[in-house]
Amino acid sequence: MKYPKLQLGSFKEVPFFKENCLLRKLYLYSNEISCIPNLEVCSHLITLYLSRNNVTDFENLDMLTWLQELNLADNKLTRINKISCRKSELRDLNLAGNHLCFIKDIKYLSQFQKLNSLVFSDPLYGDCPLVSLCNYRIHVIHYLPHIKKLDHYKIYEKEKHWVKHFFKKQVTYYNVLFHKQLSIDLNLLKHRYREYQREMHNAKNQLFAIKMKENNQSYLNDKAYDELENIILQTKLNRKQLKEMKEITIIQSKILQQQMLINMNNSGNIKFIEYNTTSENKIIQFFKQFLLASLCSTIKDGIGITDLRLHKVTKVCNKEIDELNICKAKGVQSDECSMILKILTSPGVTHIQKWPFNVFHTDLLLEEELIVTNCLAAADFDWLNRMSSIKDSEDTSWPYNTYEKRRVCILLQTPAYDSTEKNVDTKSLLLYIQQMGLQLHVYPNLILHNTLI
Image (tube, one colour):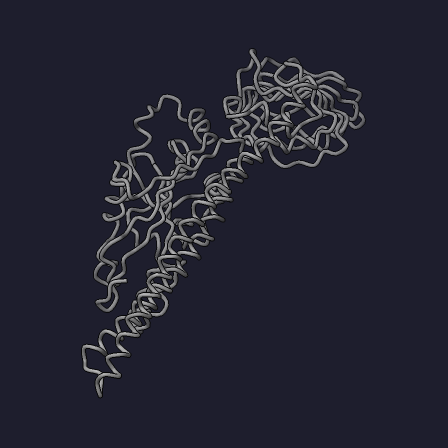
């Protein structure tokens, strides 16, 4: 078969091949091809070079069952898709120089059971951003134990044994951390329970004293009635506070467990940093000011919420997102990236039982628009709407729900754009985000019917 003479870089798509083509090697590097071609007709093809093209998706590999060497270096790949290639003969795969930032995507390559050599870092094509992530080599060897070379360096059995031992130790380490924190929380709960027992004992003594007064007098005066009512109210309040503390301790342990699982599954590249609101540092003060400024007249005048109590600040650092920013935001200075703080409206505000874990490593990467705002009423519309209806109906039972009172608000560092603009394209937002997100547990002091809760 004869083809016309073509210049380098002139291919935008792969030429047509006849059925049962005997072609064994195909070199199409340094062109403008935008996708991996469907070369099912080339049933004898064992080598395919598509380096330095414009390929954006990891696709059509299930059609190339006899392919043994594939070079996709220096393309525009950003994710490795979940694929099904159980019959694949692929042995050498080069993905160097692509914008691959997410270390958890590596596990999808485990479908290539015969893969011997995998390259993310190549002196000819450059490095993928994930190469600089924490525990990169360890993670690859753990999830792809059958490969023999990584980035042109041989993997020895001793290294595989060490990686296996490392992951066992890591599980032990996180278990120790979890149980240590759980022990601290349980000790605090026990201490509060002992205080509650002492308060109940004092209440019984006070009730006994009032009873003795009743025996000595023919009737109880107004003062005694007031004392009795105060004791009963205080007892109910103490019991309620103890119950809430127990519920919050259980929830906090579940949240901590999920945080540690996310950190472990991402090889330490997603970290949760807790800030204690009792310490008056600059970060806590900044968030307090921002949230107070987000209380609009709708909240203050319409519903009656006059203040917010900051319960906890959790800063989430995602190194994968940072690496993606470096790839896409070339020429943007780091001090330009953290100029504006916005509330993410969906799933921006929720109650403490529905911690938005997905947003840390999946939701911000969806190919759709994000809506951010400076107004808490817009970010937590459904909750505030219910609050308004409850206030109108004079039903005060619902606001006492522990889970509903503790709201979780997600804040994002966004680029400096016009404050009236609400719709932000996901890709452009990710371009500037230095940290994946900043979460705040917000415990509101609600004033309903002139009663401070």
